[in-house]
Image (cartoon, rainbow, N blue to C red; front, side, top):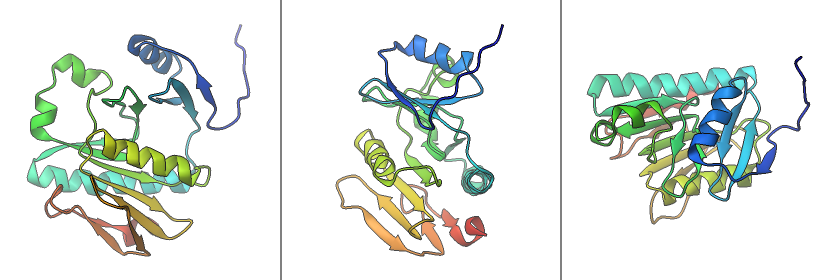
Length: 195
């Protein structure tokens, strides 16, 4: 017998789970996407809407196209889970890891939640996302080793750029965003994503 439960979107439950238990929770409930905070909260993420999904794939595609051309690292989409140094399990909308860091992982680590923080992270603010929650998440990436992170907020028509040991830079209605020295030569074409 199957049972169905209606849960509020982005439900946060405080549950102490081991890494193995969290892995099993995610894989036994493949129709959901989960994140696990450093404080032990399990966040059930709702599926994205059509516009958010098509924009996320445009971001990941631009990043992957750049990565394939220069072979400096690996690109991941929103289905990839990363075990951050602070213990959180996060799934950025799109991210990138330098090749030497990726290749230093064992095959088992590459198959599991990746035990590191990506070097570059992009998050898209969907209509259901609370701004403060996303801003805290972006800072968490930086605090755990990301070299560059961008929060694209179509509601406010801004992109927030996060860097280690610097104030957040807010760009108003930019057409593009540079990957700076973290992703040499990469330019995220926001005009294409917003269309």
